[in-house]
Length: 185
Image (cartoon, rainbow, N blue to C red; front, top):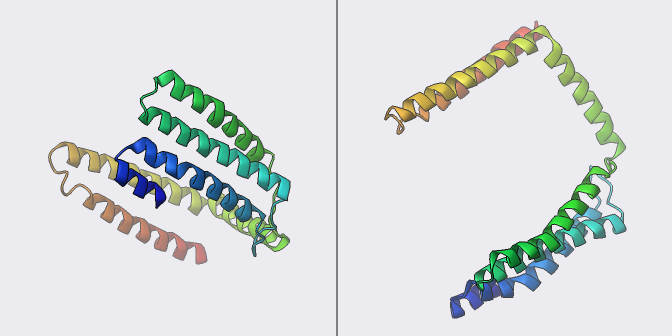
């Protein structure tokens, strides 16, 4: 809100972004930290050090984006804007990538068991003859629908071309019902 007030008083986008910068960076960092350390019904909370790493990486990235926006709105040359992005955003992206790839599962035991059971059921569904046929028909239906949409849109019927997707959704629902009824027999 402060950024909006500053911008409306000065009509200078750089001043608006400058007023937003400290509040957005700190608030985002705190939000990320508390969201990751919070234990839920499905997951255990993250370790404080790891959550702080995520929080700092996201805050640095946001700081870099906002600082680059300030420089851009102040009329700085593009190489300076890119240097700020390079200095803050790219290392943050590398840190976030490392953190995300090295993350261990924080799921609770009952969630893991449920996920394994669900995956086994879906694997059975997708490898069965009905599952393969249903996926093939569904893919063909949507390819055909997109082709009809494009043909109608490019030939001047763009106003009504979207109706094709309503019919495709209806056919998809009917196919689901038919294959579900066959699967129960």
